[in-house]
Length: 175
Image 1 (spheres, rainbow, N blue to C red):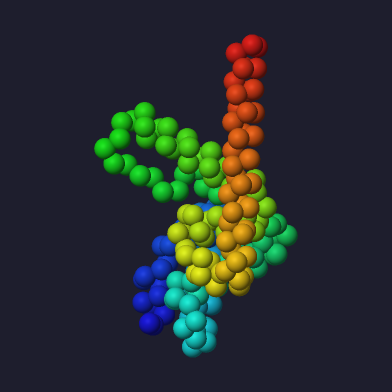
Image 2 (image 1 turned 90 degrees about the vertical axis):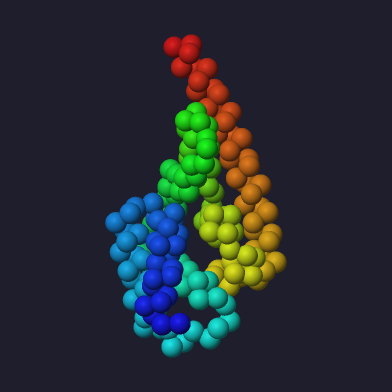
């Protein structure tokens, strides 16, 4: 596959991945550009041990980490809403789904970085265990165990947020 084919095929998905990690559209565009410059410079090194997309995402991940190192900031800032799905739903259902997605991303944002990475790749980008392991340079068993721990931590975080939300709602009504 040529560099141009990789760019045409994967640039939107790479941009979305980076955007989920940095939470800023302009920075995501810059980092996507940087990612594909690195891909262009290293395409001759692709060995075929993984899919092209997994390889490109691993490069994007390193570009994001380099950006954070320069900014001395290692933190995910997920979007409020990523994959809007509008089928034959009522406006109320769409709003409810949007709030649920926002709540999910806010919960992910509060987790430690390794949990955020594995959840973004496995559950949002829908990478397989093998692809995630290749992208993160982890073993498949580490991906599986970290995914389970991350989902548990997310569950706890979402429950905590709901309880705090209930408390805040009640306090607002009292005041």
